[in-house]
Image (cartoon, rainbow, N blue to C red; front, side):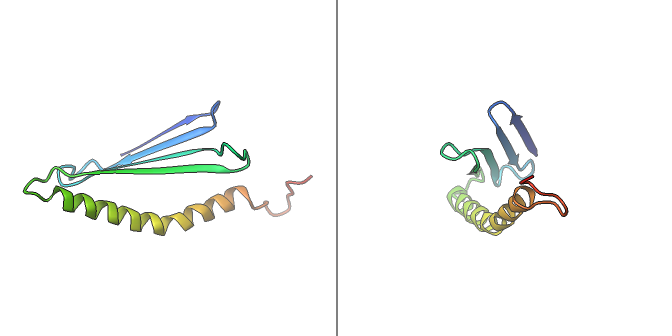
Length: 102
């Protein structure tokens, strides 16, 4: 399940994603916040947080939570370059035949 909220006045967008199935085995909630960087208004600051919780029982919670965090980190490391590339395409390239400097 995903939820997004945008505050145009504060120039902040927040997204939250979480699984809705198998939550007893592992519940994962990811929150991202996109905002104007406090030191440079031309930069975007992105904050990503993940919460992993298991209610499996039998002493497996810690191992499952560790596995969830490890897998989340590996997947995020794969996605991060793509995210930056998309930002570059959206905000840094001029459309063909157009100039941002006119």
